[in-house]
Length: 156
Image (tube, rainbow, N blue to C red):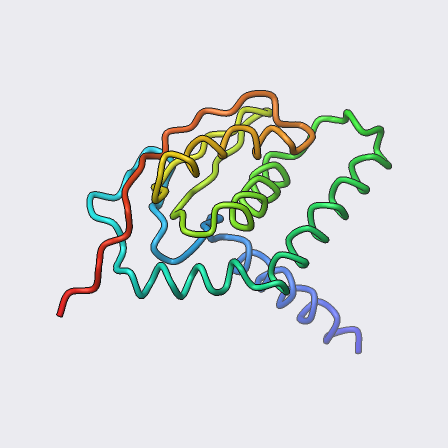
């Protein structure tokens, strides 16, 4: 048993490192960074698949529950405590996924400054980004580098 314990802990740590190494994205087609904009929008069927997942009632309930839980955890630490960049990034991303379902967005956060890049299908969704991000406690400023690019129709 004494020899098994370090092996189990090592395996658990290795799993954690691998699981946490990928950056947060709203979908597989999202750009790799907030400074990279897509040159061509994703195919319509990809957007529909992503939208179907994001607009499901279960997904919305999960995202809202996650945001509430994080806010409650933050309130326990004083409410206005400095938020971890990863928490801000994840909360803003969740908020945007639920409210801008056809967007291909990426989120970066650093010391309360949030940058949102990628594409959205229309100007209305683009205008929603900053107010939605500012609803998350700990977000001080929002820089929107996202652009409007409607989804491409499937080629046949």
